[in-house]
Image (tube, rainbow, N blue to C red; front, top):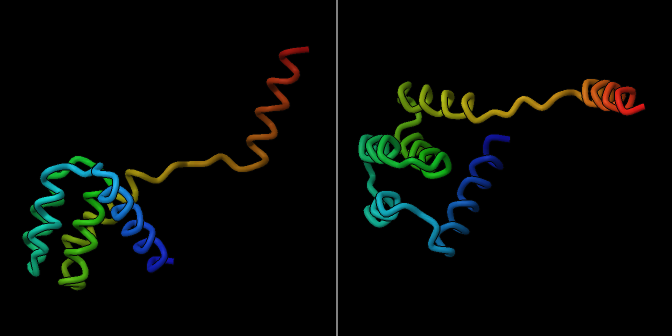
Length: 103
């Protein structure tokens, strides 16, 4: 699952690169292509797009998979961007309530 999530992140970044939809700071990070996780962490703190931030953190993690700071920042990012989707039952209950109100 994590691998496919990373692949999706990279695919989304490639699409944005092709469409010219990336920030100048992120373009600088891509052009530099540093082999130091501290550089990628620095870029992660400078970009504003969640997708760009995640890419920078994933690159840092590839360079140093044992760095706890990277894991914590990724976890925080994923937690902040998780959408709580109601269950089907909750959706049906809400729809039924709305339907009753309209009668």
